[in-house]
Image (cartoon, rainbow, N blue to C red; front, side, top):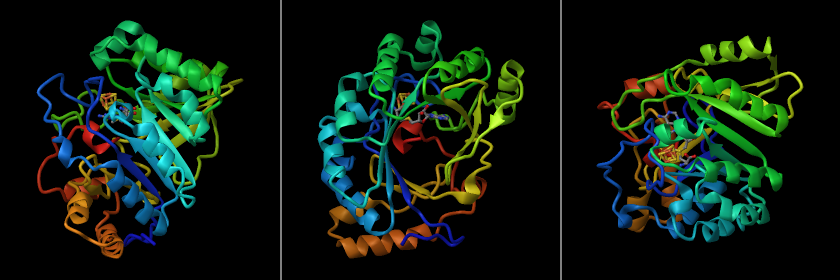
Length: 325
Ligand code: SAM
Ligand code: SF4
């Protein structure tokens, strides 16, 4: 099993299958001048499958596919189908921006994807273009509709930013009135390549905006190890979640690790990363040796994101597109 020095068992892995993306959300990536990882340095699907297989023997039951944008990686569906043959993997989720995803909804349904997280920061077409630097709002909304039509569990992720999309907090919440969707508000984190989050609105402010509209929200039970506080607006089909990603209030029960697109294992979003699994695999490590390396690396997991950040050697100029969110 993968257990850290605080007794937390790791059962959840977030796997970034690429650092490439077809949007340029300003809170995630610079507009241009991006240093993509050279193709050969990205983990191959075979390497990812092997890592997932080792991780499931160590007690991991849940994987989230993320990126960059997962669907810009060719043959993604084939890879997902392969992962689905691993019977120890109980849950397979995906986070996507929805631009290319619409064509794959039926196939995602066919492999019984556990849920889709769709990133959508606004319901206003012009603001969408400002935030993502691309004109794809209608495509993403069409994907939203297709996911609902197929009854695939759906969460919509909105990064809430001062002066950028605060006016969307309420319209987004209203999606949960009519649709069976979980709308999740995420505090902005400092992973846009500059090392600073410029427009943070904290979770308390977000809740107070919501309560200004709906009155006191009903607090509902959070799933085990959830990073979100969950609420329900009156008479709603879906629910609301608030993720204190910058305030880091949820680290105590952390059960996750991340694997970046170039195979670096990260114990925390805010640490500087450690073990490079790609290099170990390419230098001929056996499955047993990889398992031992993973177990050892987990012991380096810090108590929380604040400790992880304090222990970095240098400031982070990482982009979320290479870490995977
Ligand atoms: N491209 C896919 C997408 O956008 O859904 C998957 C990768 S993206 C890096 C994963 C998640 O990270 C998205 O929900 C995105 O909104 C979130 N994210 C990216 N940069 C962020 C930041 N600086 N602060 C908070 N969330 C961020
Ligand atoms: Fe691309 Fe997702 Fe980052 Fe937006 S948040 S630039 S869609 S990786």
